[in-house]
Image (cartoon, rainbow, N blue to C red; front, side, top):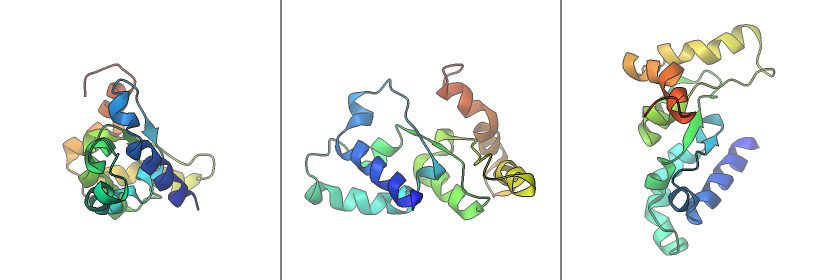
Amino acid sequence: MRLMDTRLALLHLITRGIPSRYPRMKILNSHLGGALPVLLQRMDNQLPWEAPETPEKASVAARRMWYDTVGHGHPPALRCAADSFGPDRLVLGTDFPYETGAVFERAVSYITTSGLAPRDADRVLSVNAEALFGRRDP
């Protein structure tokens, strides 16, 4: 299951301190970070004794990275990622060509109907990508 692969990959990046050791490297993660948003507090609580060499809290390291919005149109997942990482760390993403037609359209439209503040939805749809790709400050 890709969601678990995503979470495990992010866990390895975080415990090895990659986001803090390479602060200028921009890491873009898929699928809203997989299961990471719902496990972030648990990682903050447990990594100090399970992986004491982790250089910073998981929640701090996670906010150094970026995440696409591929959540299959599920507003609670999008809001959880926005709450966990900050809406300024999310960029529009789709699962094209696996999603087509109305499902593909929902991948974009759910950003504005998810319950995110309009300003945050606008950031996700345009401003954040400009910051990620060096066109604008975050």
